[in-house]
Structures are given as C-alpha cells and as structure tokens.
Image 1 (cartoon, rainbow, N blue to C red):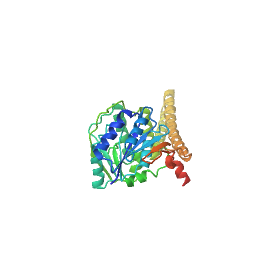
Image 2: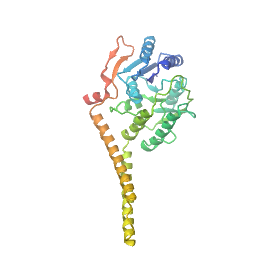
Image 3: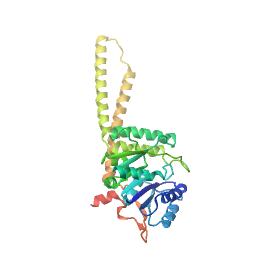
Image 4: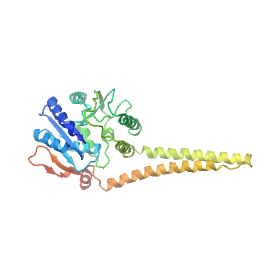
Length: 326
C-alpha cells in the first residue's frame, strides 16, 4: 500500500524540515511519498523544500506554485501529484502530530472508509481561528447536509477513489470538503491530539476565512438563493400586512397624521434586502464568468519528483484549461 502525504506550505521554513524528517523516521521511505506544495511562500521555504527533495529524491515531490493561490488550491495541486492508495492532508506547522498519521491510515484501511476526519477535544488555535472553524462547521451542516457529529478538519485521510472524484472539479474555487461530501458518505472519524504551534502564528487571516466561507456558501449549494427567495416572500407578506393595517387605521381615525419614520424604516429595510439579493446573484454570476473564462485553480512553476531534470510548467498545471481542451 502506497501512502502520499500532501502538505501545503506558506511561511513554513522553520517547521517543514523537522516535520518531514519526523514523518520519514516514523513511516520509512519504501512506500511513502511526501508532496510539498509551496504556495508562493515569501520566506525561505523554497530552499528548504529543495534541500529536502535532494536528500530524499524518490520520496519527496516538490511542487512550486507561481504565486499564492490559497490553501485549498494548493491542496488540489498536491493531490494532482499524489500517487498513493491513501492520501493524508496535513498542515506544515506541527499542530497535526506526525505520529497520528499511522492511526489515521489504519482507520481508513481497516474499515474501508473513503474519508477519515480527525477531531480534537481541545483545539490549540487562536480564538479567531477556532471561532471561524465553528462557524464554518455550522454553515456546512446547513449548506452541505453534513452529518452534525462530523467535524471537517484539515487533517484527514482520503482514499484513491475519493481523490480521483475530487480532481474532476476544474473550477477556480475548490473547497476540498465540499467536493468530498458530494461524492461519498462513507466517512469515519478519529480522535487525535492537537499540538500547539511550534513557530510563528497562523496564516489564516479574517480575509482568508471570509474567502473560505464564500466558497462554501456559493460554490456548492443554491441554498443562499432559496433563502433569499424565502426572505423576499416573508418581507412581502409583512409589507402587505402593514399596508392593510395602515389603511384600516386611516379609515378608523381619519385625523391620524402619517409618520415619516415608518416610511424611512420601510425603505431602508426593503432596499437592504434587495441589495443583499443582488449581491448574491452577482457573486454567482461572477464565479460563473471566472469559471467559463478558464481561470486556473493554480499555476505550477516547477516540479521536482525524482526525475533527472526538473519539469517546468507541466501539462496539468491548469486543470480548467485541461478540461477545456478535452
């Protein structure tokens, strides 16, 4: 059984070397592939990854992206180069303990799961990251019909079948968990420990969390459009009832002055609802335009994978363009 471990890297120069060495010590090199994806990291990650590849040329595949595309896109690039029967996705900051990789793969193999997610009783992230994760989990329950007792963690194991289905998605806005959940419900979960971050701070900013939420909201469900329709019907009904109430009150009390505050409130309320609906429609149309315009998920600048010469700009660097040619 061949195992691939995909690690997206951004500002991970201080941790990626010890992490790879620990994985090699635990798993050996015979049936192991480690895919390091440099997501446009501005630090010294490129030099560290190159040195690791030269030390373990048959084990480490190094994928260098042309710029920063985001974690989800970097993971898609890594999965594209993964050859294993099972693929483990983990962070580069040592918060996912390397010793847990064996348990994760055993859980998937023994019980035949397509996906195994990990969960921890205590998450050692910054409070903003934990809050964002909880919000994303609640939204996924509603948008993706996710099992409520399942936590969508970034540390997970995927089968070859699941990865092949995920890689069929050619669009520029991937969300790994959304793609996985729409092709299988054969899912397991495993409790693991969550370690404190060894160096630096989390690369997840509020902007990145917001972009992830938009991918979850818009890319994998039309539920926002249905909610906006229900809101429009509800506010329309409220407006009709308010009109009837004003008419009846004016008939009963003709001398009652008409108040302008209620008119202003009604205008602001209904205008706000309409603008939200237009914004949702614009987001759907904008993403549809970018997808039809073949905006790439990622662009690979270089691949080092044990061949004698590095490969520049491989044919599958742009899945969207590849899908268009086929």
